[in-house]
Image (cartoon, rainbow, N blue to C red):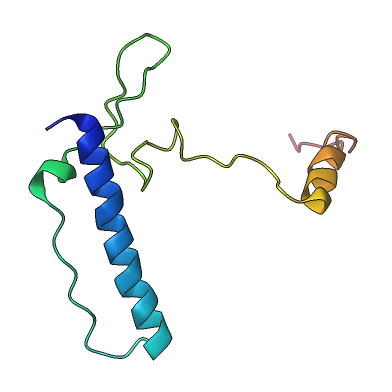
Length: 103
């Protein structure tokens, strides 16, 4: 099975799990907890696989729902609203505060 097919199966697995959790949220987190299917064994050892600066594939096993690790696709893409964009632009205009270090 190709890595792309495995990533599709991983996304489908997470989608099913998220649907179960969303349903649990609607009923108010009642006990017993819902039964979630175990992750398939071939998806447990799935690696990120993104190309690193050295040209080798990334070996990180801790991947997000999108199938990539925190360095290759898990980070924020920035502010989306106008208010957020203005606030992030102001960060460059703040003067650095002087700090005194005790010796």
